[in-house]
Image (cartoon, helix red, strand yellow):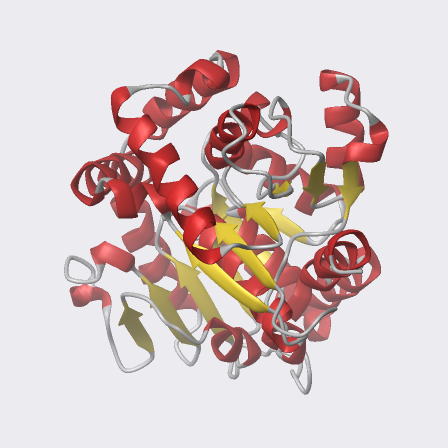
Length: 364
């Protein structure tokens, strides 16, 4: 790859998946002495409107998953070539054009599909002549917006997604590349030196995304059944309302900038089936118990995990405790099976594979 070649990465701050993929790609590009710029055109063009829509998304995640299911279904049937043209979104398109003109990248990566549709428009108008590609951040249940862009390359996270989109959208196979989900390299180091969990040494990362009553019930049951376990709760905006759950061995945090280290010192992740977290767990060989999945794309992430035998689900607090007990009994034999399943699935190296393709196709 040529020294300091430029790649513009367009991402968006809904959840963590899009930005997580963008950061992993930027890290790998910079490791190869390429200059990467990650931007959120929506937040740049209309910060107040974007913040409102982001709050709506988090409201759906936390309290109204059925509403997200309705919203997601509508995005799957809408004409996104028309959606990209509106008073507000035209400003976002202009923001992208400005970024391209000011920064002159060799290639553009989109970790959110709307930006690829905007680049379709700019390309058709002759205003942007830079090649661009889509990095899909969902698995299996991949909605239409990802697939109906004119982007010449679409990077997919797994072989099941390839089969799904090939059959549903009848795309030219040369446009589809199975590379894996881009994950930061530090997660692969997290698996090194992890010892078998026991009830006395158990360390849990708990993502507090389920309904609040369920989160409280889960934490109370975990603390009662495993009084020596260390539990780190990633609570996000719920940190204050969950502060009463904190204790000597239960730590409530809003977020962390060092998730690889947290995964490295833990034995299991309990939380929702977000794509980034699922693939970060794969890379870290950290077994997963999914206690919450949004309708739509997260159902596909969960389906992949279950197909690989790399995690289990728990639809109630009692089921969570039963699942955990089974994983830990007989010297953690069940836990080891999940670790081996993650290793066998080999869902690592997505960022490396994507940048390899960029190097071959655009940085000759």
